[in-house]
Length: 129
Image 1 (cartoon, helix red, strand yellow):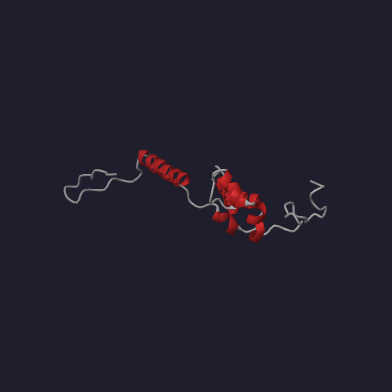
Image 2 (image 1 turned 30 degrees about the vertical axis):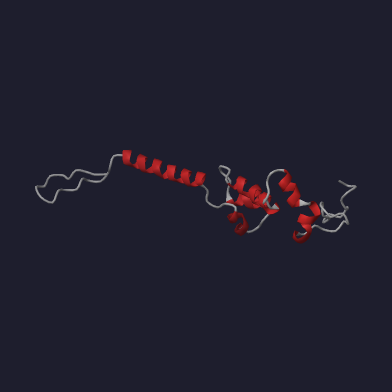
């Protein structure tokens, strides 16, 4: 790396042929991005899609907190990290399953309430669920 990157701590690792910085406006042309993604059968893939995938997949990891994602992204604010924690079917199904399990467990517990009396006859009403 030392022969390709300036010694300054703020030096860019990837530069163009002239040694100048790569920017959004010149990136695709300099690295021949459209040709590269076409060659691997991924036409239409944008460079930013890699960043999005790189942050979305870890945000779906079991136990990954917002703070964990922020640290991975090196962001101080939760705003950017929240973008990558968008809802997904797996998470939604997991939440629904947890609610279902909690409701079923609550139904199995005997009720501590006194049964209600029927409006007529003074007999206890049948408990419905």
